Length: 336
Image 1 (cartoon, rainbow, N blue to C red):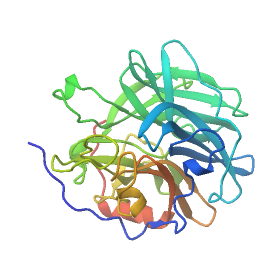
Image 2: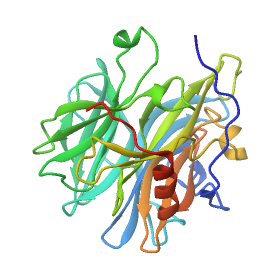
Image 3: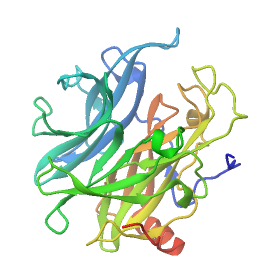
């Protein structure tokens, strides 16, 4: 039986930017309808954003396709979208790519992607130096997505988080968790271990997945994740006949030298859909989905998130406050 969650509220340490949303379809100089779920990093002196753009007709509530847009900013708040989408990342069997996450690793920009194919959803990692040419380094087997990379090697290996969705293995329904793996070269991945399960999170009853790429701090890798709860009593809530899910965001702290170990876990949600642009007027309401995070020299963490699958928003918190939430929540015994 589904354990219903009930009302939730955001942590008082996180603050929505008063000018939200920071990017909408109106800011895009080519066909755009839903602009959300953007990867963000700092690269060559600027903030860089790659956002998901689903285009079609909002009036007709129709979508015709998906591409990725590129934008730059001097302050991480005001964005200038480039005149055309990114080049298609093509390959055998690929239908579309979406939900990018960005990190700078060893001086290059790596972009993690969800990749729809005719034979399932795959998680991909591509690398670029100029946002014009991309080399796809690896694609997972189906079904997997929400891959995020750590921004440096740990113990001589590259590390990633991911969220496979084994429907048959989890009883035929949605019950998905966060996994971790490592690689010697970003191409071949192994040592897969369960990192965080749905049953570990009191405000989730359906699935978990990585959110923004982890941030390195002296206390550990500060790691956001998304958590989903389903309630059959929820109604339409968007374009579809019904939308019964709520997407919230959580935070945990992973060990610096052994990120397979959760050393701090905040037991309540960090960010919950509450603002008008998160709970109404969207493609899927009651959804916040972080995909990007930037740690400033001041200690402020900028968290970029999709709201209601239609606009891109910004929330901020001080890194010390986020770490404190995790440590006060206590460690997780782990599965590795």
